[in-house]
Image (spheres, rainbow, N blue to C red):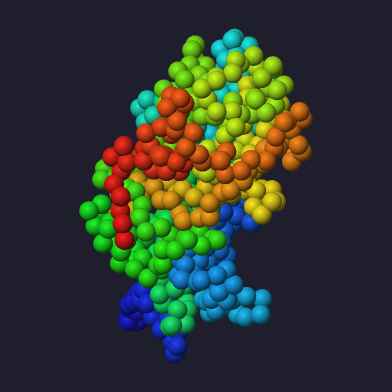
Length: 459
């Protein structure tokens, strides 16, 4: 009889050839992934986990960690080329995705016709699908608050055959092996970038709000108590100076209550949603199911700047709230302001960042809110504020980029973004009061997280 051939032994996690090393990381999703394909916001069903996309993530996290030792952007560019390559120089790092497995994509929700909506006239309501409904009380489900880019558009009427734009699809579960091959002198550069990406980044869209979060047992902390030592050991060589590009901070916030990743994700997003919208803190209590007026100054500012909005809405001026401030601009831009009395979203005011006198389309939020995977499969919440340049100027315009008709002012400086008058006692219901001394929404959010039991983890 022929002899049986034994199975091949597994490939070691790290193996080498002359001058080069190869490291395999086994990675899995712990929260649903949206997008990640060639087309922005869409899943590539033939290849949902792409090595080229991961390579881009690794370069970002390399700049945020190892690249933080650079003195100037020019210095960073030169070091980046030495590791990752440039048009004139080949990369010394190879990235390959192997042995991937992924669940089939599913729509995140569906639109249902509700005859009782809009005073009995009826309307469509989006019904989010699991796992985005995680709490027994729907009011505790916060995940839809950060998933608005994926909600699509409802059908135009009760007899319309399908949604104008269906809700986006997501992948609930996936796993893969990331093989990284690099020259031996780049070990610290590559391994630090992979560690930071797996734990603080993710796959696909909206990773700073927890979508596409990842777990690699080799790189994960063991428990909440071990977070400080884990952070110090892994980020020991990361410099902490401010730079013109985002860099890893010297601290982050977490909470000792562990749980399954999706439930933990919902908890950390609930703090974010409540900081921006919850009645009694961010806005006045509503009546008859309608939300109350915001306590933040942006609506007052827009209605004061665009006098037609004040007349159209019929809202009286709330004199104690400043009408020349946009503190939530620090939390990420653009912001689209939807007023119920405006109707057409195409005419909605949009707040954009300005850099060196030029309007920019986007300023990514410096805040990362996600579940941080532990090696045992559970997770703890993570709130991390990246070190980023201070936002100095914003511009208010229409969503199509045109100037708002009748606006008395469109460009605003730093005093409209953060200022001590935003915590003045006269502004008695300011959401920032008691949380920050200089009127910073970023600092106020972090302070509110601490009030909710979050602990500071330092390296």
